[in-house]
Length: 282
Image (cartoon, one colour):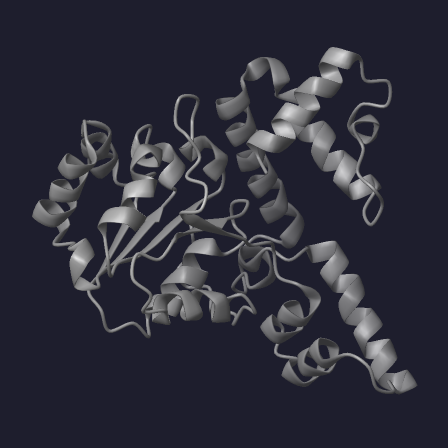
């Protein structure tokens, strides 16, 4: 599903973390990995935070920009990758520039360069985002321990949902917690909670413009995208696990997640596949 730029932005609680990272002037700081499922708002979150940054910024999306992805994958060494960024996009790692690469896992070689982004670029701020960043560090590519900082973004929480619905005062009350809630306000909150549980917290669904398809139809389209991603990454033979996992989450919401929740009488090999799939799509 293509991202709808007409959808208004909802201020997210995690934006303060992005802003703090961008404002950090520490030399050779870690690379920030922003992870999360499709349509939870990763790109909009980072882009909104980047709006307050004065430094030159390069933003690449490796799912859309196939040429950039191909050129990155053609680089044999980090120095070639560095020169590519400077020659094609004007990025300079030692000059305090910002590099934001979205859907970074689409590159087969980018993961090799992450450690050097920290070690070689003294003043740069680097953010890599994607829906399955575990793929960034494919077999044969060592995870850069001590050189990255992870941030996992989920859908809108209830207070963010209320803010998206124009209920700022209720959002503030929920976020603050504690205190006495009147019966009338309690009833209002329960009504909004019912809507939240039915609609979910995906910004594109919550903030869909008037006249567009309803929430169930949009959710069905997004879930179809999830299944396609699962099939593309994990293979056709395990595609049935995608639907099983989604059903399991819905049926056991709030409870401890077990492999038997996905397939009740899972065999040893099936249980291993479920665990591997969970790690792949974490």
